[in-house]
Length: 208
Image 1 (cartoon, rainbow, N blue to C red):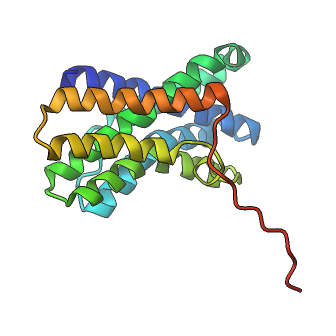
Image 2: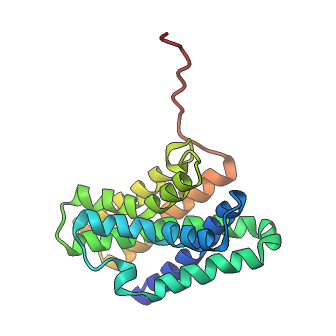
């Protein structure tokens, strides 16, 4: 997979994340500004947190302001076509899964380029892939998807581990990237299809 294809997938993922965030904003009856803001935070928040943690400046959307425009346009498009979005739910679930693995790999690449240790690279990849959704859920007063039983963060971490491990073993970059993304995407879609989830910790005993 070429860097050009990865960048196109990244832009698609940014758009998809912004649109799903817009729907979450609509469920909270936010105004158009709130919709656009939540779309940007969700689509670009994971990368921003990554860059702040790594001291990687300027932030991605500061260096490339067109990313903000893409996120805003995508979020506003979701408002216009909201009545049709439910019919495209399966498509957005697939795009969300694609976004998860694409953001993860891009996060790993940035950390690698800064010479970070491999465990840090994998965690940074996971943060890039998942933190935007956490910000969305927190702002919408929901329990973040990351902390529920969904196979989400674990998928990102597995993809990051495969990617980092393959590169550490000296395997060619592009095939390793493709395999990592394919495995992560397959895991996420399989979990959605068969309702697979992480074990839950349920504690209901009252100490008082």
